[in-house]
Length: 110
Image 1: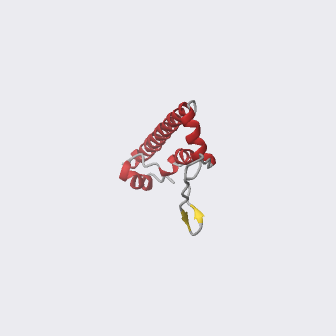
Image 2: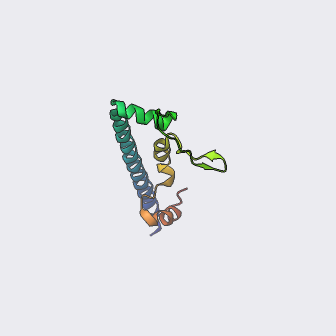
Image 3: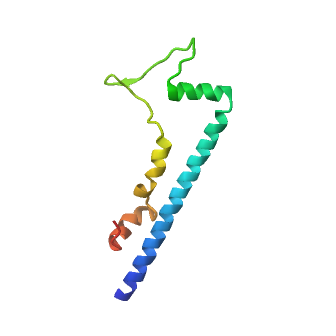
């Protein structure tokens, strides 16, 4: 049975890498779709105003602004959070679900 370990290890590594790449591709495609939607919204006046309010802290005359703080520091959503999600997929991937950690140990994957 020892003669089957190396081929199984190679199969596992290649299959694992393929699944991680598929997850990454799906994340990138979702990211691209969100960017397309944002670009489409920026082609409208309302979209430009919303972007300016959200990203540039633009305040429309007559509106009241509420800033939520924690320990005196404004709580804001991190910029480019979509990009961070896509770039973290390979490190957080679980291509074999709950069994991934087990198989990684069996086949010595770091």
